[in-house]
Image 1 (spheres, rainbow, N blue to C red):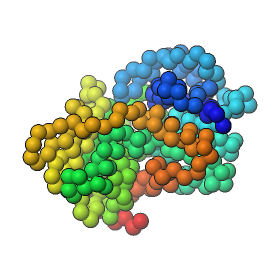
Image 2: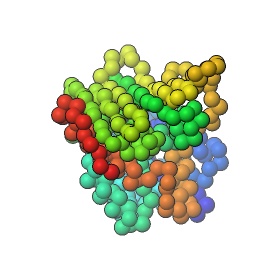
Image 3: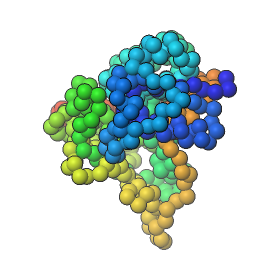
Length: 340
């Protein structure tokens, strides 16, 4: 296979970010090409889209075939891989459909609304012999990869604690305002908080116990604060879908090691050593969405099956852990023991 041909399902805000990633990959000479996009709302192809990062302008779709019917697209297009960027409550249905149609699948996070649906996706991938990857894109973000190197390599000594935070207005955009319906979005705890919960597992493995407090407003679990307990470190993660409309989206972390603090904030990634001058570490520049697409496309092209950096089984486990967080939150922050 010389070139991986990709079709995208959905063309809202996150899909337009994926579109930028395909443009970067093509410009870099990668043998990956977006050939078709399907969205039930044909106005998506000619209009901009609002997200918590601002308004995405209408995309240039020259040379890309557009559809409003997925079955028509499958009949007309020769594609190897499908990039699923539709609402969360549709992830399982269409990932299963695409794999049964013989396509490898990249699906946006969260993997699905329940761990049972995630398991069905895994079973389908195994039964059909297809590759499946979930867009837990922080696993390809240089700042977080640097943090993992610091933890694994011990360059600043032992990690003592880790704080992570994601803040956003409540998303009022999306197809039929699906974010505002807990049964379709899963609330902030599954849509936004899932990034940091997955990252904690990526960095440190499975926690020994968890405790979450939350409050509800437009959706359930709209603002959440979680503690993940490990043997030698406590992780505290906060996520909010209840910021004022004028508050910009933000994502940050603060990792305290024995010999330094490593902070991701408004000034980028900074190391604050116990002694000496703070500095910005030299890390590569990379588009995390482009990197996750590149990873799966290379597996498709080279017929690889094992994805050690971002296996779908791990994404399933993250959703399973989110279910335990909800259990804790619904009991006022009760500590829940986790038995891996």
